[in-house]
Length: 458
Image (cartoon, rainbow, N blue to C red; front, side, top):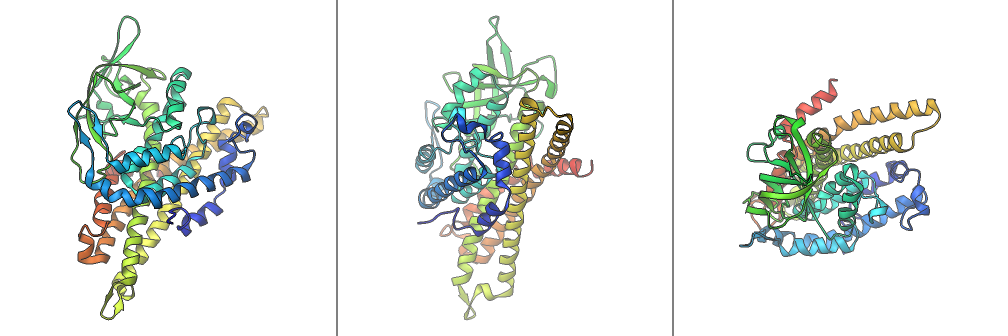
């Protein structure tokens, strides 16, 4: 039986050597939830054991169920029905059901909503494992950031309405940000949000390139202040599909075929506002996109690992000139470079995720339970500021490096297989098609370089 967690020695090494106990302590807020929730750990050792058990279960699910169906998912794609509904590939639907049964669809949500309350570093490991099996499925699994945004900024009423269903795997979500004329420049968003006399909000306009736009919970960035241009005129809203939400088309994409990418028309759609007006882009979407960029880095790691393994296995068995081609210097050097690049990317990604856990944990402590001792409070604020700065720099670094590395590894893996790699007999042509998206999505890599420079040279 295949297990994509247990068979990766580098993941096992990092899991054993990173201070997961500290991440657990911060995430569990000093393990205060153990007395209230049976599933909450009472100490770091128990938390790490839980992480290991869940990742082991997920690794087996990915190896035995999800990966064998990935090729069919890629070939089948999605179908836009006449009534505007979307039929996903059978393998995707089966995987979503299995992930719900495994109780991993609320990976980072609090215990009180039925979530696992796991730290981001463990979530990044999970995303990598799942992406190695099927990167398109991760586009749905990884959208748990939508639930995190609701938890961080929405009212208690909205949290109670949506988050338990997210944790139970009953719903999936979508980040509804991009428009035909607003891609990298989200300040140019035009989709209109307006109130009626009773204070009820509605949405009107078009969104494009929306991953899983057929999901059940839609977070929509819209212009709530018609007289104000730029980011300060935008707010964030949540709505559900219905008669006023029309999927007008599915994009015909190069790769990631198992994940539907939709064009959506909102025709005076009822919605609810998340948090405060005018903070939709500046605060809420920036937070959402930072998490999504780490997700893209982890997704890139999964594809790179999968591509390398195909190339490595082929090179050890394919003979030319009476020797296995792994003995040929040109092939050997490519394999070495791939392995070094993958392990470097994984180390960067996991360290970034760890720093983000510290940043979020310290910020939460300062807000809800600051130290009474002034010296301790001052030290905590100092650590919080440091982690925030590191996270702001490391997040775009991870997205940039891992996505560039992933494309390079996928490309070179095809080269190792030669003509066979170019054929659909092997999965590498799919890996290369899937990988290309990651240099574009969640902020192009050219944008990431600008953000990196801002943090590095500050």
